[in-house]
Length: 285
Image (cartoon, rainbow, N blue to C red):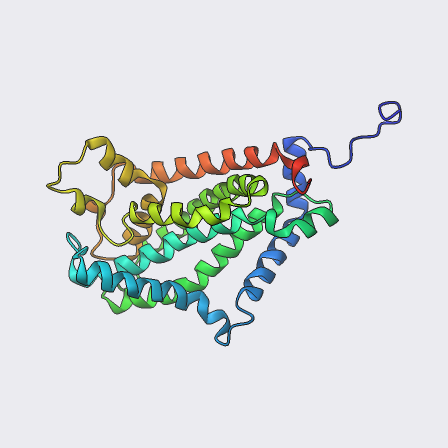
């Protein structure tokens, strides 16, 4: 009877092209939802939206004390460059870290919305990634002030920040989609991810220069390449190179822009298709 009268299964997964069209039709909802989440995030705090900037700055201050002063992680980075180097790394990595953590809870933390309304579920992890991008843009005001205060005046190279962050946003969105699907079936993943992300942070050169730290150490060549070409390190290096005068091309791995584009396409396309394939299962018991 369903076939005879042209009826389809309720909640059935649409084709990939139709799914993209549905997302585009709901672009205003995605943007409004991300803005609402950003506003509500600190609504109970007295300092409100200032915590968007204060949190990564406090993290940077702690890392400077522990790694910069006590552990000597400034090796290979000029002293007048290390503070903007560190702050940039913390801000850029936090962008990826927060997108992944928000993605893990995108479905499992919004089951009421998922079960009550029919809409493409990818709207949720995409809106959370967009929320983190908006938060980073607020933080960039302070980052620019820090960079200028330590001797890097505005220059044409600053324009490179735009493509670097856009590529990172695509990469982050892909990861958010992957972990949204995984987190929808395994809620305990939200408890594990902070440990995984902390390990990733320590391996990505947030607090130190990877080439300088590996210099004169008996480290296999493939391991050095993995550390330098991992996506978090690539996007941090690009933003540092764009903003900081003393952070030249010698700090960058070869073909860094090609790797930035490749990581964005790989994560973005793979994450989107992987999430779409389970569309009809989200919100089911």
